[in-house]
Image (cartoon, rainbow, N blue to C red; front, side):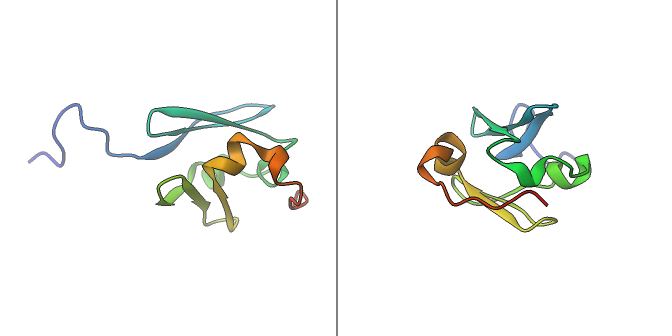
Amino acid sequence: MSLSAHGNTTLAVEVTNISTHGIWLLAHDQELFMSYEEFPWFKDQPVKVIMNVEELSPGHFYWPDIDVDLTQEIIEHPERFPNKAKGI
């Protein structure tokens, strides 16, 4: 029994890389980078927490383990949103 057809993508969003500089998120064939400088609440989190991301609606991402939600616009243009949370 096959759960999905071969070649079909089942994930709309996934974390593709975690480095010492930040996180890469792949959403709908577009890669987004979140630096720890701009998104400090991810910096000291376990991999399991960072990898647990959901897309609540198109372009709206949520990390339930740390109660962080971000839109694609915030990720692409953090300078437009100067009120950001402090790192944990």
